[in-house]
Amino acid sequence: MKIAVVAPSCTLKPEAAEAVAAIAAARADADLVIHPQCFLSDGHFAGPDEARLAALREVMADDSVDAVWFARGGYGSNRIAEAAAADLPPAARAKTYLGYSDSGFLLAAFDKAGLDVAHGPMVQDIARPGGEAAIHRALDWLVRRDALAIEPGLKAGQRAMAFNLTVLSNLIGTAVEPDFAGAELLIEDVAEHEYRIDRAMFHVTSSPIVRRVGSIRMGRMSEIPENDPVFGSDAESIVRDWCERSGIAFNGRADIGHDAANRVVPFKILSN
Amino acid sequence: MKIAVVAPSCTLKPEAAEAVAAIAAARADADLVIHPQCFLSDGHFAGPDEARLAALREVMADDSVDAVWFARGGYGSNRIAEAAAADLPPAARAKTYLGYSDSGFLLAAFDKAGLDVAHGPMVQDIARPGGEAAIHRALDWLVRRDALAIEPGLKAGQRAMAFNLTVLSNLIGTAVEPDFAGAELLIEDVAEHEYRIDRAMFHVTSSPIVRRVGSIRMGRMSEIPENDPVFGSDAESIVRDWCERSGIAFNGRADIGHDAANRVVPFKILSN
Image (spheres, rainbow over the protein chains, first blue to last red):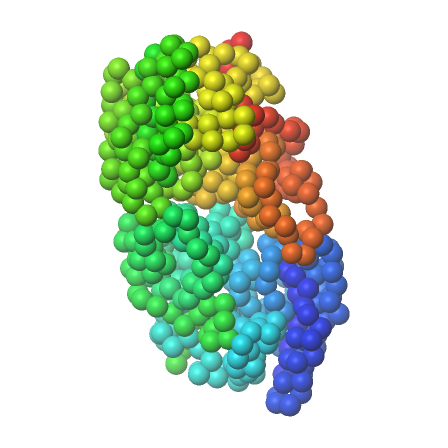
């Protein structure tokens, strides 16, 4: 299968691209095509909005591409997400899109547009400790829908969605906000203070749109900076508390996060 | 006039309270009553939600209180804002409420409930360089509606609102979201990276509710941490860009911010 890599947010490190290309070549089950746009740099971003959007639209419209794999997060996909999901060519509907973190803006916009998206490892994850496992997991899922790649708590017949909590908070009320009705919502975050997790949970669970979810599960909240003063509650208690306040069922923990263990969460309902 | 100080977010420093009480006593035009709740501490907050809400509701219901002055920001007023604005006693409608930063959740909820709110200096601002001027400005406005205290760009007959950008982003879509229709919206922020300012501007200006504003003016965005890599655009360019993208008029700069120069922005239309 042919997998196209583009970078709608920040620049992909060349050494990460090389390492992942080598893994794909050794597996011999995936033709990995890393778009040169991944290596552009324009301030914070992997090239200007126009270049990032053009590369993404190019691979979306390419009939020969089976999957679009986002190179990495960072910040910036929100700036092109609405345009990326507009006036879709038929080829865009015949492929899968995989990413997480800042890519959540695209997962949301594409899910809303009816495309087949999943929350899971990205190319730059090779740089994490144990990152090879994350790359293989992503490829195992993209190439052969390996059940072992999938977040273990997902249930057949139950729609699921997964987002970085801060990204989710920042897409509420925008044109890319998807339909959460009845879904199990998995959330994770990285490098946010407990007061910010609390504030984002307030924001997210106060939304009548988000309150349509069936339940919430919490992935890992990692690299939490020290709160000054001590916050008085940990991340899981914060998530539980806001679920309780908002009448959303809290279904426990999820095996997703900003780490190499991050499992795949397809938004499409699993049949088996 | 009697001014009650409560702390709906974080704990007020006793030395700040003493210094401001001394200023008020020397002026002799304001009877400043600092509620003991201001000095409670419960993890991140100035006491548990119940205690912060009870103190706020107590002074709101007190007929002898002419104004409620929020002690400081930090984080936490969102946790009690909806309850604070519910089932209001008549006395709550006969007074003024002043604060900014995290207090923006209360300004929003109270404005939505028809109360008389203003964005401006708080008690803890005495600790800033030149903080005495901020305290006098707040008192000058509370006691005698001194025109010099007011943000100089405000126009008679034109409704204005002011918010910390990050707070505003976190109240969109919640029960405390106010009506922005036709207002000039002033925004300021502190200690947020440029990528976060960009993301918050995306979020705020993408909201159809916020797009009802007549225009946006930008206060100070201070203590911006270094962006890695260099973002490629400064705060004003970011705000201008999102105003342009969303069709909101950008009206230039505003004299508000997390500093002693912070001027008062009454949400009530100025008549003179």
